[in-house]
Amino acid sequence: MPATPLRTILIAPLIDKNPITLQILGICSALAVTTSLDTALTMSVSLTVVLVLSALIVSVIRHHIPSTIRLIVQIVIVASLVIVIDQVLQAYFFDISQRLSVFVGLITTNCLVLGRTESFARSNPPLASMTDALGNGLGYSLVLVSIGAVRELFGKGSLLGWQVLPTVDQGGWFTPLSLMLLAPSAFFLLGGVVWAVRSLVPEQAEAPEATPPKPEEVPRERVL
Image 1: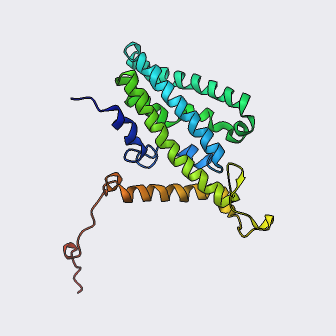
Image 2: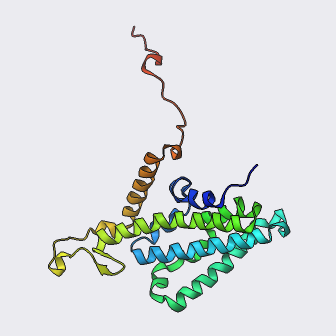
Image 3: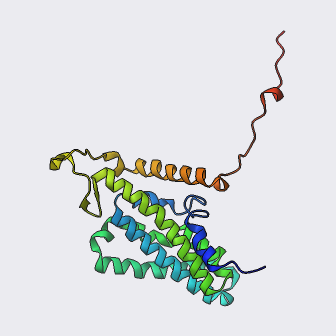
């Protein structure tokens, strides 16, 4: 079987095989840290760095990991990288680190990270594994940044702290939508993104579990 080109491995997870819209992975952080664009960007970069480095390490040592403890080894690798990322955030981006709260630490158990190390990095060479990890990280980041930008723009009228829509409190015309800063808005927006992508890419739509019978196939009850 010919090897998949690196370009295809990198681009496929952006839309066609996006880990959030297609596989519904990593949505916990997608819903929790997208109240503003800066937290969404920070979480996206953190997860992508952890994903790429863990894929590299797992791929390099894949022939030396006993299959019976492979998940334990992968979790230890990911957890070690997450600790480093968390310490860097606390040292240089303390305010954002405080707002991200426990969600940086929860990268350790993110289904996307463990899913790529287990399904791809464990059976592919380092360069392909890093490319796959980068593509999935960018696909994840694309959704997070999009939702974070919409929520901050319509919830506060700003992007990255810069006022874009002049609010009524500032003498402008825009009234911030407080719903955008609450958890339900993330569900609505994420659902809208999944619906939009699956409408544009019908291949992503799941097959129906059952096909309803046609009207002429439904038996009619006899009335006595």
